[in-house]
Image (cartoon, rainbow, N blue to C red):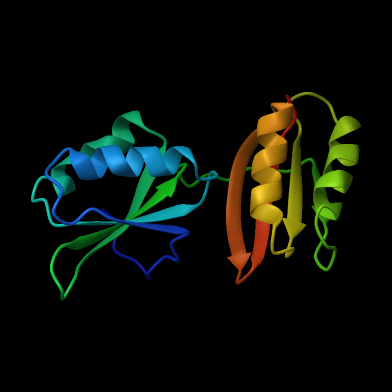
Length: 162
């Protein structure tokens, strides 16, 4: 498990007091609802959680970013949905400063002109963009290859046309 700067979690799941494999199962349910690239902070005091998590990335698309012992007991595990990867974009749409749903509307127009398998990079600082992209990708069947917070409140999405 990598030791690095503390990642910013999108969701925190406190599973202190839950016996193994409870923390892992809870984390899996939460990660199912996150976008690729988003981070879950799992807090657990079950001694087996560390071993469970070490093998998890071998069969699931997750990356354990950091672990740290907590002063108040338990251990914090920072888990990113989707392993770190470089996604190459065929087109870039910078919608910073545009309010929602504008970024998704423009992304849809641009993606309509792209070929299957091509990737659109969408950049937005709209406060509702994470929810908008999540709903749009689910409704249209597009592939959200990656999603990252590039700066506080600013997101970069890589959307692959299907």
